Image 1 (cartoon, rainbow, N blue to C red):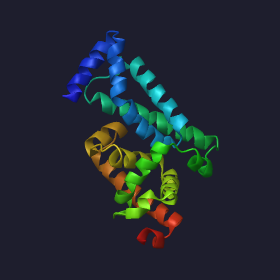
Image 2: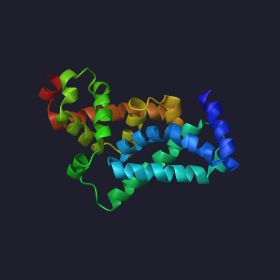
Image 3: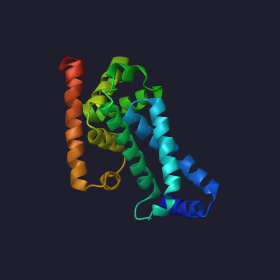
Image 4: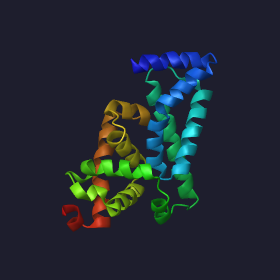
Length: 202
């Protein structure tokens, strides 16, 4: 039902109905913001990515073929912009982990805490509310490659299926499953390095 409603809104937006596109924005901007802020790690940069993504989506609505859902198509645009942003940062040598932790949006703390049971393989209980835990989780996310960070956020935060993730990343379902396996393993390894096994068992 949601997909059919989206297709109707896309058709109306193509004909110049600005309210239709505004409805698409209202439906999905919070969800794609969650992905963007998880990927680029800064609130202002994430807002820029989301704005650019919707501008690009509006400009290229004619290219949307309807073979996937509008949300999956939009998600792919956001993901590509996030990866471009991260690569530009690396080329400019502007990555600063301490600053990244200090400037993280408060919304990130909730999302990072939500990742913990899946990544650690058990319920960390009281550790969820500890700022130190969230900081370590943020640092561990920063250590992941763009692709590994992307699949982890798509699966654990936004709950996308393997098929949807494969459409977003334009790869096979098997590749997605492999990336997710390695992303979880690397995330756990980085957390162990930052926190120590004793903290995880507390």
